[in-house]
Length: 197
Image (cartoon, rainbow, N blue to C red; front, side):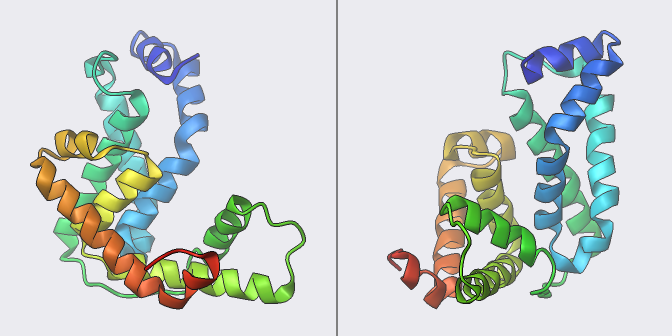
C-alpha cells in the first residue's frame, strides 16, 4: 500500500497503517535527523526523532495526498524539528570522525558493488567515510540541510524551495556551495573514484 494511503488509513484510526509507515521509514528518518544535528547534538537525535513522529501523529488529519508525497512531507517535518533544535541549542560546529563511519563505509561499498574488498580498500573507504562525516559537520546548517534533503530524500531544487519557503536561487546557491565545500573537503578521496574536482 502506498505511503499516502497508509497515512489516510491511519487518520481514520487504523493503527496497523501507522505501524507499517513507521517500519518503512524509521531508519531513513532517524539517519536524516542524526546527520542534520551532527556530532555535537548526537545525544539529542533520539529526542528529535521522537518529536518528528509526534508531529506526524499530531498532523495526521491535516495530511493531504494531492500535495507532496508522504515521504517528502515527513522529511520536511523532520527537517523542521531538527532546525528548531539547532536554533535552540546555539549549535557549535564540532567534528567527530568516529561516529557513523561504519554506516558510511557500508553505503559506499554497496554503491560500488564491492565484493570481498581488500583490507587496503576497506581502510581507504573507512577513512573516506570518516572524512565525509567531518565534511558534513563543517557545513553551515542551512547548507547541510539543503544537501541532505536533496541527497537523502531525493528532493529537487524546486521541491526544496517550496518546502523551505525560500527563493529557488537561494536553495540552488546553498546546494552549489555545499557541494563545492564537500568536494574540496573530500579532496584526495575523490581522485581514486575518478570524480572531477
